[in-house]
Image (tube, rainbow over all chains, first blue to last red; front, side, top):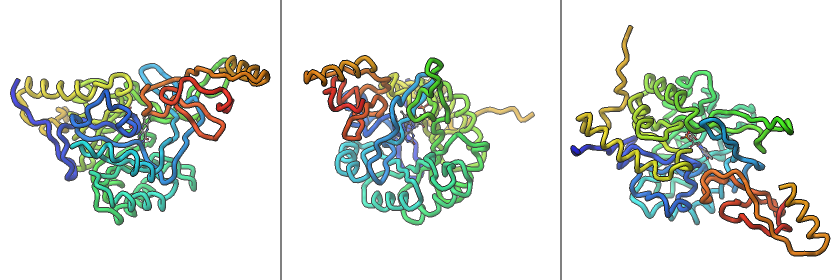
Length: 306
Length: 62
Ligand SMILES: Cc1cc2nc3c(=O)[nH]c(=O)nc-3n(C[C@H](O)[C@H](O)[C@H](O)COP(=O)(O)O)c2cc1C
């Protein structure tokens, strides 16, 4: 096998390879101590952290669907204080960049979280803008202006690389992506889960305790891929593409469509060794194709113009 | 769950110590995803995969 380069640099963060473990599917890392070697992945994004500990939604929190997983966790997390004290130290033992995902009920909460995180040695902050906006019953990430104002306000408070996790539950994701870029985001991470429900026909009740859930897994992959492809056309920002990636082939689809790195979520539940398999697969592919650098593949999709 | 709930009730009425082994839909199985939770009386959730699956029936918010 020829020597190839998998190293990518996105917004000043150096990843050993373009494989990122996504928010919420890897917990705080330590749970996977015996299964995943953090040193070998490109980066990790923590479970979304809120200012106060969050208990999350009533169970059941999962429904399995055809080629998909419907979840309604409700951002259950230990809160920023316990996170910094009990969870982050473990992740910092590795040479892999740690990105902390955060969410707030309002702008002030995001700002407070950012100011706390400014004091920490972390690689970046990911704004999960897919959480409910109390005021309008919309989520921030579904509105161009709300997205712009939130990111702009956060941008003023931090020099850390700022990632923004986009919601796919929008009419035109390119508009939100452009808004995020204009406001000062450094990296776009897409997509989060697709809003969905499931019904128990015997009881005629929603299957999820929280009624609404988010769909992830292979079921959403082609749609997520389309969104990455669309966003690539309107921004020069680095993109972390995710949505239903199971294999190296899936990862390649995202990279060729325009993602600088790929995010793994649901697949971790199915196959904890997926990251390693994908990294090995990428090397093989590049070697076979006679491409030295994985960066050359990004957005290399051949499209007929007519 | 309904049957265990009834057993817990009967045990309690006879003052018999009772433990139940619960099942929930699980994704990660290692305590990371917070998916397989059960609600406890102290108004908190516990993970069936890591904190359980066996719980004292009196601690569960049936
Ligand atoms: C159980 C579960 C929990 C998740 N929690 C979060 C979260 O806390 N924050 C976040 O930004 N995304 C969260 N996500 C979304 C994933 O990070 C990812 O964007 C999405 O699942 C699509 O990728 P996948 O199909 O590879 O899972 C969660 C997904 C699942 C399945």
